[in-house]
Structure formats: structure tokens, C-alpha cells
View 1 (cartoon, rainbow, N blue to C red):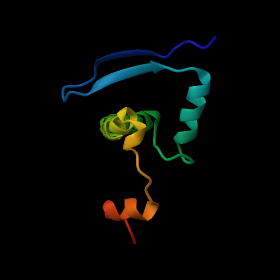
View 2: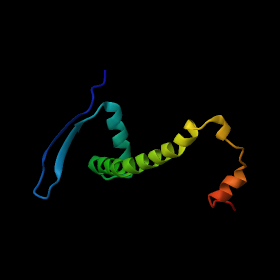
View 3: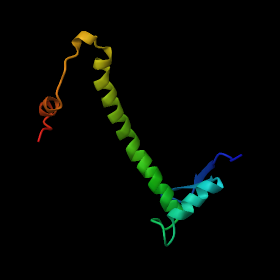
Length: 101
């Protein structure tokens, strides 16, 4: 059975950086090792993990905003009566949204 990663942090220095110690299952550690060093994109494991955290931090709110917008656009159609639907052609939809060629 693989143990869940344990995370501990403590103060590292005076500029506000924190130290993070993470215990990883062997399979995850092997993946990290492939990403670092002369054949990888990162100089060390810390650089790789910081990049992952940044990507997650910057993408999640954006993703949620897009999903919320999609959901809001779908609600009226999901709540509509069948008699409210009308046939549409793809070119008409593209024209209405300024996407036609």
C-alpha cells in the first residue's frame, strides 16, 4: 500500500520563503527525477515543484470562470420547453457570433 505524501513546512529565511518537505511514493519520485537534471527541463526538484504549483495556482481560477460561463450558458437551454427550440444552421450561428469566414 502506498502512503499518501506527508507535507511539513517551516520558516526557511527572512525574506518570507518557506521550506517544504514532501515524502513521495517511489513512482512519483521516479517521475520527478525524469524531469530534472541534464536530460530534464528543470535544474532540481524544487524548481519542478514550484512550476507545478504556479501552473495550478494560475490555471484553476481561470478554469472555474470558464466552466461557470459554460454552465450559465447551458442553463436556459436545459430549462426551456421543447417548443422553444428552433432549428439552426452552423453558418447562421457563426455569423451571429462574428466567427464566420
